[in-house]
Length: 107
Image 1: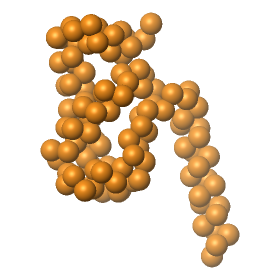
Image 2 (image 1 turned 90 degrees about the vertical axis):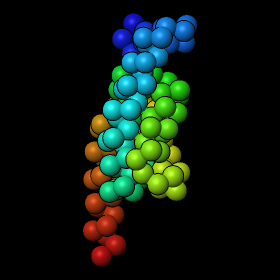
Image 3 (image 1 turned 90 degrees about the horizontal axis):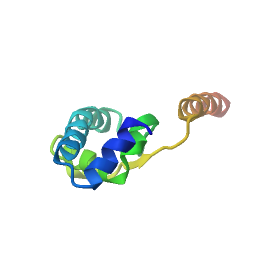
Image 4 (image 1 turned 135 degrees about the vertical axis):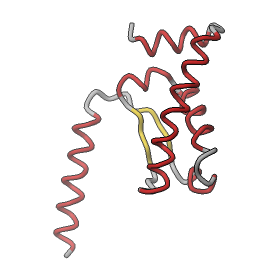
């Protein structure tokens, strides 16, 4: 079983250390999310890979911590989700290529 899934299960069973570690992960990642929201202003941010094993409660903590670093109205415009696909990186690369091609066609 992946370690983040074990961590989530331990926190779900009331393990204080696991809960604190998840909160620390959310706090540290919130710096990146806040920077992304403030500079790129995305409408969607998906977390993939092993982080998705932390579940929806991790997203809640992440958004809560990010909310202390960027204005709430900026953060509210971002749909934060978990991506469970192993192909997420490839899908993003394809999306960038398609976007670039469509912009060339519109010129």
